[in-house]
Length: 395
Image (cartoon, rainbow, N blue to C red; front, side, top):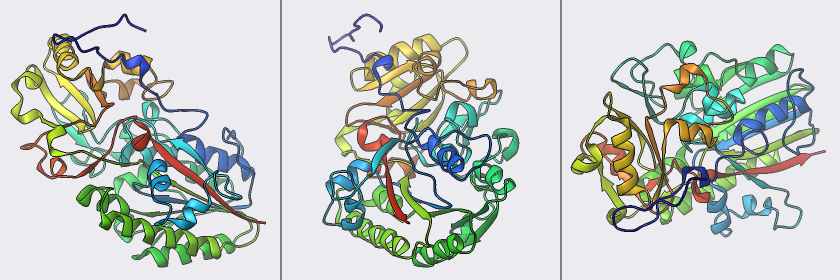
């Protein structure tokens, strides 16, 4: 731990080593599918989560369904709440999403079984090494070659090659996206438009084979949270819809199967007065070539020779509300996992800033859509970082 440091107003700066780094290797999203694969008897995988083996497994991932958010809304999610450990018979537990806690990063962690430092999707937007340009890893713009960007095989590919019937049941819109290809491919992709269709098809895919791995996904809860916030009636109604989908799938599970409900991140509402506009703040912008990441988890890329000054300024301005780290400090602290590939190193910002308090660094001109969102995520606070691992079993 570094000695206590203070900004010019006397506020203590946060030590990046004190940030609650995700539980890679023992309790993170990247541990889920390798544990499932080991339980299916596929060679080369190790179970690092305490999950009993099953012949048929369905992973239902709900975008934006944070662990803390379920606990806050038992009346709106009665079935999911019944799977929490405080409930009669509930065995659920939280996992850590990984850093940053954002969709592209988390889906890659789920599908590859690797932490961000290896699969390389280290943020919502990151710099393309050697080019003064950002890569949006959710929209895949600009269109970098997917398998050069993320060269590791997915768990689905390895499980399918071992003879397990493997499928992904999701929106037809995601069938051929680069993110699907490098994170969620393997076996067959089955597109269905509605959540109800996906639940029914996922159950039938489980029943069709003696050994099966099925992944299914819904995104509407995340979109509702971004637009209206997680403290809105619209979000609570969507949570109730998700709860009914989970129950629908659970009621159709065939024998010898397990269903796991999980998510890619949680979410937090940030008020307008707690938002700092990078595009209007000359001090934060000094020496910055590119601003990447998102409002709660920023990658800051400095002009050549200015990295130390940028780190000093961001620490002075934000260091009492955000964990502000140099690239190497964030890596050593384990934010991106126990190792970072060489090809990933320069995708990480010269400075990385992760929100601890209710604060966001928006960019009103360069990121107008994202800056207008009510609900945000990306950092390592419990409401963003903890995602559920809820289990239903059919003997």
